[in-house]
Amino acid sequence: MPVNQRKERKYYTAGLEKPPTFVQAIIDNKEMSADDFFHITDSYLDWTNADDDDAVIKPLVEFLSKWGDELIFAFDDRMTELLYSLDTKKIASDIYKDENFSGDEFLYIRCAALINSKRFYDDIIKGRRKMKRDLEFEAILYVPQTAWARLHNAETEDYPHDTKLCYETMSNTEGWESFINDVTAQHHFLMR
Image (cartoon, rainbow, N blue to C red; front, side, top):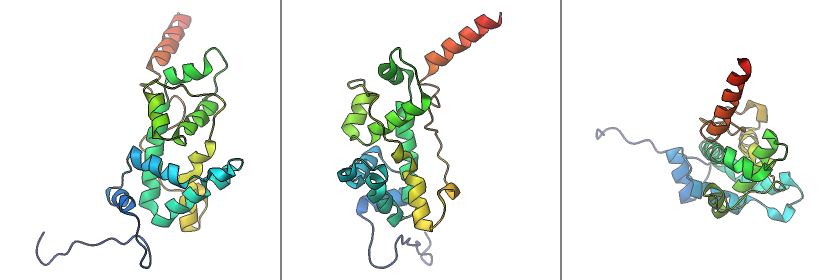
């Protein structure tokens, strides 16, 4: 860097208050680790209001909106990636066995894995724990849009960020490959 050029310093909040070091690192890198994601959800979901999902997520929404777009978008990206990784035929089969399958319900069940600790999530990914059909937490899906809308005094529908991956059920084509291949084979058989 030439001597006469100074590296521009970015300030993320007004006043003297600065974000915690790990938050500053997320903002600078525009990326959140799984450890940071679970640290944030473990710290900022308020389970004293377990019967009111909006009250449970309120401290998390406030925390994300306090530190700006980059933190909100990084949270959204990591949440989507974690949900995408859980989107597999194997995990769905463990939950539904021979019962009726619902793509929306499976998404909301996967959301529950994100709010029950990194260990819980890792155990599901590694096959050491099975998810249960009676645990859901759809509200986590709306945290990024709600935090952004709060920060900008805007509507959640105006949320400008798109993630690279999609968390909708069966978006993880690798995780559903055997199912997709079976359906394709059945379709070709029926078309003869």
